[in-house]
Length: 388
Image 1 (cartoon, rainbow, N blue to C red):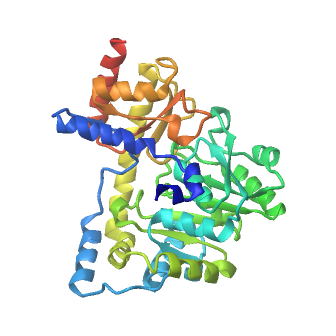
Image 2 (tube, helix red, strand yellow):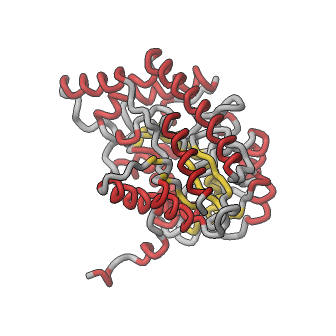
């Protein structure tokens, strides 16, 4: 039977972050204390007001299918969020609620990617992005982006690597794994270049709410044809609820709706009713406090890593990751992270997942864990390095 599997599976690699998580789970079964700085998941969960909203929806029996585009009230709430926090007028009619940002990316690629189409993205980048493209027989064209460009595509790189097969770009700002953002002026140039070539620009903004140094902005402020993906997972601390959204030009809403009806029917109804409470004053106050805590952790971990001998060539300005060069300790980041886990009980992940360019030299360290855990992790890594 396995001989009948689709050939596209050859283009989709396993997620090494999850492999390390499995190794860590085995060590925990043996009684080891493990500090998790691998998976990008906030240690905070949904505020009580959000949980209460979910409970009310269940008690009231509000559990039927919603529109494939999402609850009208939630689409309106997201529209108001853009107006209040980003001074952007985005009609609710352009907002599509999805089963996580993953579904938003899947729908976007289903709508835009033809077999053989190239989509430019930076190397390093979130691995699933290239796999969404591959799932629709497109080609993820990874462009080497080092620290000198903040690990992000630039207009110059887009122009240099665009080919006759190129159909668009897929960007993330702030980025996983690097925590870096694309400056507004640079993003505007990229969008203009791609538009002139009649291509599409998709911008993953799931970490947009967690921007620390400059005022956060959305690519939607630069051009009405950009497709933007966002999520309730990161800033809103609702990872397992599987809820996100997509903003698209009005003219393609019916096409996305058709796909969403067939592929998903609708996002989780309970999660949607819960998410309405995310925009309450009570919840937003909590989210802002948590954002300040993430910034505090970043301001601790980045200097601490540099002191240990890691090179952090670009200080992350968003998300909750540090992309650090470990070549001072090892020429194989994969072996380094496995050894660190076994000997020090600290999970960090190698650059392997994020593209070949930085695979051997870089590690991604998530600071989405408590300050106490971060401090203990630094001590453990220091002891580990001393013994090498």
